[in-house]
Length: 470
Image 1 (cartoon, rainbow, N blue to C red):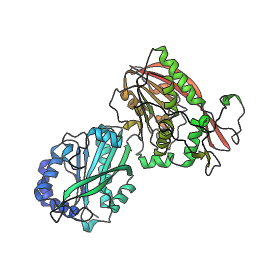
Image 2 (cartoon, helix red, strand yellow; image 1 turned 90 degrees about the vertical axis):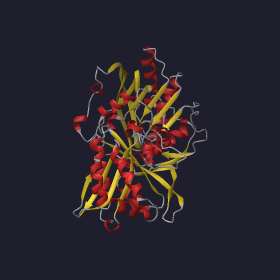
Image 3 (tube, helix red, strand yellow; image 1 turned 90 degrees about the horizontal axis):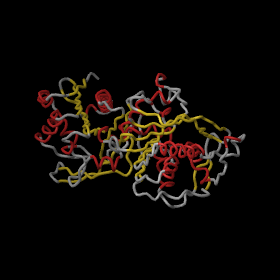
């Protein structure tokens, strides 16, 4: 196929696109099921003129033999004219607050994939996929943010489009849908239900998606290992608190959450020396919530707690353990190397009775809070699972308030799966913290045990550093 994809950036380029059939193509695409919508020539002209007239828009057209055969557009969410684009019912506004509350996304890092259409005789040939991939590549090359969120909505009945977006790394946003009103071909105004899909692109190193992250941290086997590491004292009634002083048997012993308890003690010790009473706290890569639990119990001054964790399964358990008051019931237990077993929880911690406790399925780069917001951030054993630890630290720096504190830990067990560029591997966390930006408060080593299955016990030594933002 000898088509050409170009990006339109100037108003004077639009008349040629209209002459080459853009208006007719747009009308044709959206007059078909499941949409069956009607747009006048003037409405379509206004739509594409608005794209070119404002900053923060990527508009791509595919040409074949001097005819437009496809189009794709993406709108930066912070664009001033964003409300001009139809997203949800007119009685609502797709505002920054709505984006943060419903999708847990930072508006400054978010794009909306607004339009996609291909001429009927060109479908099934890979053009739609090529247009979206070109659009994503354009966003990566032009957006300065290290991480970009791409949100879209499509008709609930449009299974073909949903399949395409899934193949391109988008995943469904559960629980979010809207009804969109539009004039139909018969002249009546009707509503159709639109569902949302999301992709997150990490520009540093590799492109990562939430779907890819789920593959790494959504298995019952992974959940079993982390529940034991973090909550064995409650789930099993485990009292083995001195596990570092005895010879362990992976077949019979379980890991005790010494690591997290020690982090709480160190954080309290380091911040008390500086007479700090944090109020707003963030835990990045918070897993099932044990770090947040320990920090909360170490600092009575805290009034807002935020946990961000990419794995939806881990977020669900964090919600059950930290917030809900029901019995935990059955949960996966570390078993053989091929699968976990299941058992019933012996006990559970008391829920945290704090109104401002939020759990978000998100990366550090997508925390739904403004810059300079948090007094205290913890980020434990995440750096060696990140494409670029240096940019991760910069993201945390931006989120910290002036003179705020960061507790940062890692065993530095780097590998090429998570951090492909070996030049970014470090052997001392202090390398990541330039003195002109950070003041050192503490530095320690803490054992971090991990039991992948009942015949294997892994012991790491995590370096734990405390830094204050200058």
